[in-house]
Image (cartoon, rainbow, N blue to C red; front, side):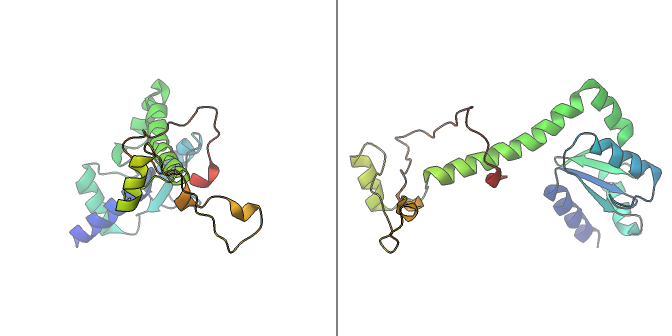
Length: 187
């Protein structure tokens, strides 16, 4: 039973950048310390999740064993246990918590941004043999446009994603310009 609970806890921690195990929920805390923790994280503006473990005694016991911290709430940031606001308060005053939160959320945004750029530029790690030979003849970039003839409007004549230049080892990954706005669709 405890292995199942440990797996469940690990999945919950991995699913949220900031996770609070407390008494009650974000909208209805049932403990003053949980309320204090919710108000604490509301000041930072980052999304966080509160999981109620008040009624789930076995899960509370497994959490106490895993963290060696007997009381609630228990705060995890980016998969790391930090205790509660007694620990996080001084970290916030020194600026250390701001850095940790920014790192936790920035890494995810950069990873998504890289994925969006890879999709937009048509980077493919699984090039066919024909495409590989074609890209080697054309200096590393495949430029054969594939336009769908079924549509005749000017908007539909855009080059399909498959026809965008394919980056290979010969052409380095393009670095995004700082002046480009972040694409909200990739969030």
